[in-house]
Length: 535
Image 1 (tube, helix red, strand yellow):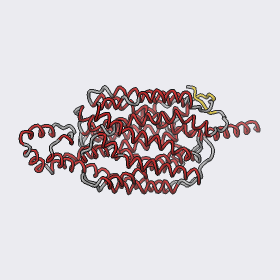
Image 2: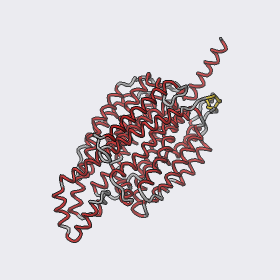
Image 3: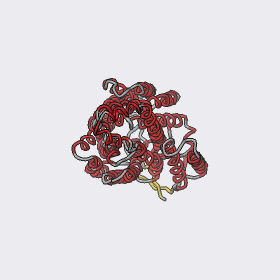
Image 4: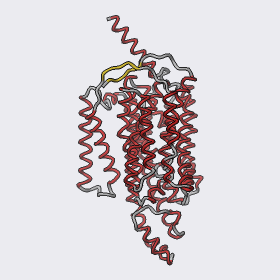
């Protein structure tokens, strides 16, 4: 296969940078919107498709699993091929899968389409970070953090609001169609406005065996995490076979990566202290970000009796914390070139936010819940993007694609494992909590008279109940159970967030480079040419 290497290009002006970022920002908005528009509606969607708590978790986990597996592959392809074309392919694939999901008649088909969304989403996430490094230096990245933060907030906050409104007023299926017109515009804008450096060709090899081993090993591990305790016992032959199989596949993957000429994930990267600690921090922040926020909408709907629209509105404090704090911090980082204090502060805020959310109940005043969410969002905003920034600043420009996607890979791996593990914990916890309250629940159902049989049959079906439609005595008991059950997940995740704090404290406090990746590559190429001429 023929790959490419950047050729020198004059430094871009502010206007040229804004023009080049237009399509990229629209693409990011589409991918975020297509992913978040269903978040506040998932309880309704899964209930309508007669899905269980396990199916609810898998609708989310399937996307994260596919994103996790595909992220390093997209990153490697970015070092080898046309980044602009790869962006357009991933965006088109993402939205087509989203549109197909709108026709789902069962949770199995919905999960399959979410897998394809995840594969393409891995491309959008990895490639956008890599392209930014081509046109923006680490030092000046903060100047534009407001734009990226605004797009993230608009997609993350607007998505649940749009999805909730569409679900309440039309039908949840239209959630999967709303991103289509934006996607068409994004693909056109990327074609017309994203101007990346010219490339010179070189011969490369694709690590197909590494791709298969990593995909199989990670998939098996995450399936084990998500199904353990519900589909099979942790202490069972099935459990042990899946875990041992995953370990063997990943061990073979490591061996292969040490031998191949073009490894999918270069293990030499772990010799870089910045990369190693950024990976550890990203794993833990993935659990904090994905493994907990996924269940916030479930808390709002199942424990607070909110509609899908209201659940979307209720996530606003967390996104506001992420947007406001990350934008301010980005501007300060660009101005002063100092980043570590912000990252350490963000990691500490994550621990505090998760601990506080672990104390909530179904009747906790919402202003308190909102404050706790704001704190967590601020912490995530300070840590998440800056992990990629510090790695791009510390590695050689030739492997920037692999390094950037590796950080995204481990963050998404943490998020997927967190979502699967915490989802399995919730799926096992809720039945136990219902059993503990069975006498109260039976008495509440018996008091319903003629409605008792229908309500009892609905609750015993194994599907997620629609809390807002249940009669008052039963509803309040189930809201209490789900409120305490989801809070348990936050309390469990809080100690894990301490890993992020320790890792970022140990990060080397390197000065931010003031040159883009393209400029660094051009300099190295010129230096190599001079050396060859002298020789």
